[in-house]
Image (cartoon, rainbow, N blue to C red; front, side):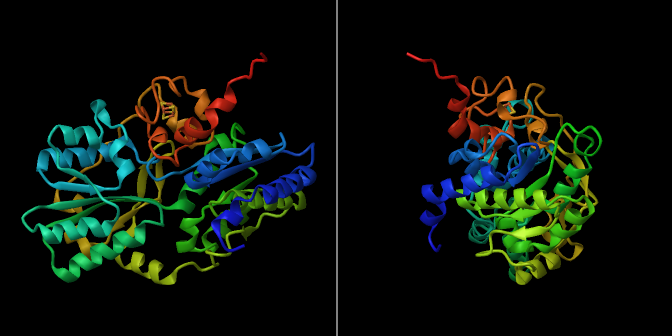
Length: 379
Ligand code: SF4
């Protein structure tokens, strides 16, 4: 198959669904976490969960970059824009994530903060080059997929000798998050989140390769199947996971062979290694402080580190008390368990981060799945 339409073929989907139903043993439990928001989106959009037998259950994971950004980081960048008068640039969805005091970056802009949406890190760098009198800060978020472009602009800014460009680095690391989930009491001791395997990230894995998942697959005895973001990719990955569970295997397999290799993109990895180092810990929404789970800018590039330049310190802020994003991101609850879902909280009026991005579990379920929850009344 070469084209996207092939990976959305209904007849092929029926065939894979039939294989899953045939091979999933009735007495066996198969609880798989799709780590990525892209997979959550595909599962909701194409109704993949409806094709699975009852013993095969999908659990949403924390792999949506906007969703895992804690309130404290949004507050930090809003304060930077309001108090220091810098121009903050970031990706679109980030602007709508609720922060403290009823604010978001978008609402802070209405209060006079110079906060702009960009399509890429390169756009922020170009703005700094165009307007040398303006201090430009790029608010860099995301997993390993968006990290290399940020590294590239930092290195380019150094080559150009720019003095009006810096980066507030909030890039996070996937394997550390998966390990944190596996170490959580809900999975490890309480058993409230049953986990029998992972659908592994697509785009992240194009950069880091399949190898980084091998240590925890072996140590925690959990199979991983890396999958693309199309519905047939996800379904094939689920079938491969069912087969691993049946065989008692805990391997890292790669369904997304058209884009992912074992070693990943070595050039991108070298660039990231040159510019970034690991933070000792970083707060994730839902997961709390996770050791060794995020990146900071190396001292050699400290001139472009907004945290160093503006003397920023970090203060954790609790989530809105009625928002269940934290428990949804840990796999403990689903969007419909939240009493604000679809009433107070909608994509137009998000109360939590999971309703902001199309990759967020709440937004995906609101857009594609909420009518499935309404019982059909016979006429
Ligand atoms: S529905 Fe809204 S308030 Fe509830 S968990 Fe999702 S984002 Fe948070």
